[in-house]
Length: 456
Image (cartoon, rainbow, N blue to C red; front, side):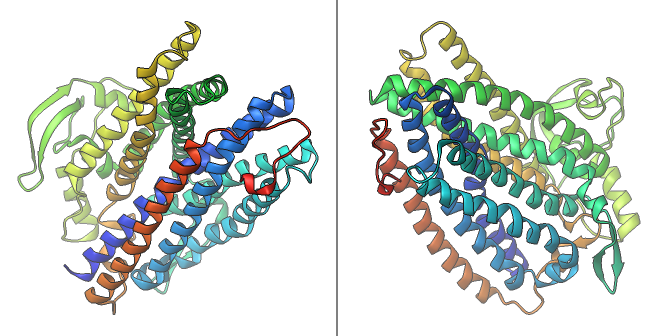
């Protein structure tokens, strides 16, 4: 394997692993803050126990997210120095702001929250966890700002073969950011909601404080139901923006080889990229035109036409992404999103019928949903990032031109083995810690008698 291919594999593997923890952090931080708000408002010790239970799990996940994120950054200098040289003037700004503001805020106030149960007043302590939750999601905004610029470059000028900042406001108001940010963050809310619902279901199945975990399950159901519906809406907005800003990606998502007017939506197809055809295809007439333009008869451009346009604009080359991977990743993401909507609303219906605590089959499904949220997030990341290929910065820098010129395949194999070992140990630690502390259930609490700091 060549250095370029190895570098791509390494970055893909480490990013997918890191992206397990990031969405979960976004949603779980908000839910922990909501649980503590219920305790603050009602004085019900059940909510305090739930806050400490899910807060402990949040701290574990937050820590692993930090460690895996640091490893990712090493690769910019190791394997992707040409990319770093090209985008550093722009890409570094939102990353620096994220570190100096959002990350410092969440880290500082998380520490105050962990050690402040007996040292801070209830309002101040509650404010700490809300600041952690807000800063966690604000951190995602700055990261997505950098990523959105790679998807749709704006506010730059090319100087000496580098992209230099010309208009920070344009980057801040990048149309891609405005559609990508809410969709990604709401996906994190689904992840956090399903995690709380699944862990609550696990405790109910084990008959461990079921009356307490029914409360967290109900909060998670409402949270997830709202987030899943909003995610579908923002996903539609993002798809329509993709048609305009990255038409090749949309065509790959649909396996659409030839331009259609009106365009039909593909339900199933066997993609043959070498022959540029789709076999055994099942399509819904007009529906792709609706998805892309809210119009039954609108034109959607196909891969062949877009390939010819790219060659005319950028010279000879293959400008198509791996269509089969993009096609099926998109369907996995959308299909699981619909399942999340169904599960959350079915859970609400069981609650309305006063059957939520007695339907063990539903709680088993809820436990499995924890895993499927990670699958959905990974599929969405694959669509967003692999769908941009062969560009690392869309229509400005090819991925092949971003790799370090002097890096050797052997060096990447060594670092990949090292990262693989570290990530394997972290994966084992993550699973064990969540399982170990999760099975213990909500800690016992008595008003006026706080547990020591080791309860975390």
